Amino acid sequence: MEYVSAARLTEAVSAADQQGPGNLLRIVLIVTVVGCVLTAWFLLRGYRRKDD
Image (cartoon, rainbow, N blue to C red; front, side, top):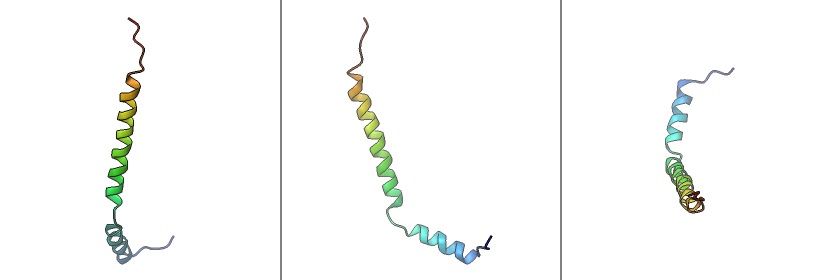
């Protein structure tokens, strides 16, 4: 296994901070999925049969 120096590790960490809209994209995707689930639940709730 090749040894990874501290300088390379520091470069990798600083490059990861400059990657761009990673966190924003993650939040947008999570909100979209949660919104789709809530919309599906709300729409399918009306199709429930009531056995009264």
